[in-house]
Length: 281
Ligand SMILES: Nc1ncnc2c1ncn2[C@@H]1O[C@H](COP(=O)(O)OP(=O)(O)OP(=O)(O)O)[C@@H](O)[C@H]1O
Ligand SMILES: [Mg+2]
Image (cartoon, rainbow, N blue to C red; front, side):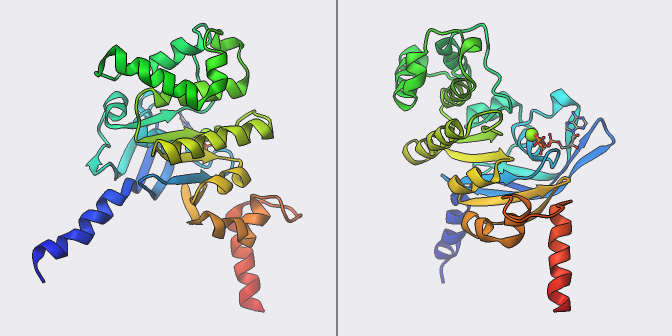
C-alpha cells in the first residue's frame, strides 16, 4: 500500500473534527481544582451539548476553550485543546475569534445602552474585510432573525430576554464564526422562546454550517437539537453518547428529564445504585 493511501483516512478524520479537548484540567485561584480531566470532541458542522446541574463545570469548560478564564483567575493546567487543526490553549480570545471560534456568554451580555444594530456591529470588530462586507452580513443576520430587524433601532436593554439572546447570537454571527460556544441559551426564557432560540441554532448549523457546543441545564431541549451529548458532574464527564441514546437512557431520564420520582442526590449515585441492583439480580 502506498503512503498516500495510508495518509488519507487520518487527514479526513482530522478535518471532520472541529474541536477536541484532551484531558483538560482547570484550576481557579491557583488552588481550586474545578475541571478534573475533561475530554470531548465536536464534529465539524455538529451540534454537541454539555449537560449537567449547577456547578458541574459547563461554563468553565467553554471558557477554557475560548480562553476567557484568565479574567476569572482561572487557568488550564493540564491537557490540550485543538480547534480547526491547531493548538489554541495559549491563544487570546480575540485571536480565537479571528480563527472562527466565539463564545456567547451565559446571561447574554448585550450592551444595554446601545441599539440592537449597534450591538450587532460590535461583533464585527475582529474583521478586516471592510464595511461593505460587514453591511452585507448585517442584512443576512436580519434575514435569519426577522425579530432583530424589527427591533434594530431599539435600545437593547429594553428588549425582551429572547430578543437579547438573539442579539447575542447575531452579534457572534457577525464575526463569521465556524463555531459558536453557546452558554445556557435557555436561561430565564419561556419554553416557547427557548424553542425559537434552538430553532435558530439549528438553522445556523444547517444553512451557515456553524458548529455548536451548547452548555445547558435544560437537558430535554438540548437533546432534541444536539446530535451528541456529554453529561458533566463535579468537573468530570460522567456519561456521553448520541443524543437519541441519552434521551432513552433510564438513568438520564431519572436524573435529568424528571421522569421518575424519588430522592435524586447525584447522577453518579443513581448510576452506581442501578449497577448494584443489576449485579444483585
Ligand atoms: N472564578 C471562580 N473562582 C472559583 N471557583 C469558581 C469560579 N467560577 C466557577 N467556580 C466554581 O467552579 C465550579 C464549576 O462552575 P461552572 O460555572 O463552570 O459550572 P456550570 O456547570 O456552568 O454551572 P451553572 O449551570 O450554574 O452555570 C463551581 O463549583 C463553581 O463554584
Ligand atoms: Mg454555567
